[in-house]
Image (cartoon, rainbow, N blue to C red; front, top):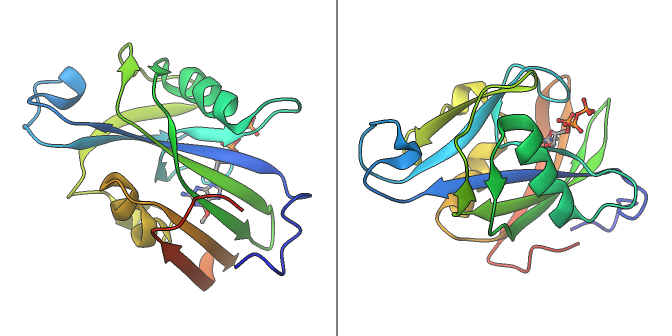
Length: 173
Ligand SMILES: COc1nc(N)nc2c1ncn2[C@H]1C[C@H](O)[C@@H](COP(=O)(O)OP(=O)(O)OP(=O)(O)O)O1
């Protein structure tokens, strides 16, 4: 899967997909059913799109530390039980990275808008894919359903040109 990629040398980043299972996900009086928290990114890679909160791993930081820090910085909540759900290599004509995907179900606090992100809960069966990374369609439903994956996505001019993915695997490089 990653034979052609210098995975040890690529920058690392994280994404968090928080799933709220309950009668009133997000505590916002919305419809019952599973929901997931997405952000409208205000800056950085993928700005303007809906995406899971996350960001770049800082020097000396583990990916687990990064995902907790980034979610706190972007939407002001503490994720309590992040678990690895996937990993993908992203290659493009700009930035390249290894992105570590986490799933979580427990959190403390209430998501709030920040300078980086505008958060909103979406039903897991009604995600805004038209305004998301195109390859999220391939793996996000699987992750929200408790699955794991590894992938390699090559983009050019903002479009996916090569998409490779395997599911039900250990989500490591
Ligand atoms: C197909 O590629 C991607 N798909 C998805 N869903 N998300 C991606 C893809 N490539 C990158 N990302 C995510 C991974 C990270 O969460 C962000 C990139 O980090 P960001 O630019 O947000 O980094 P920060 O440290 O928050 O921001 P600053 O650099 O401004 O400090 O994109």
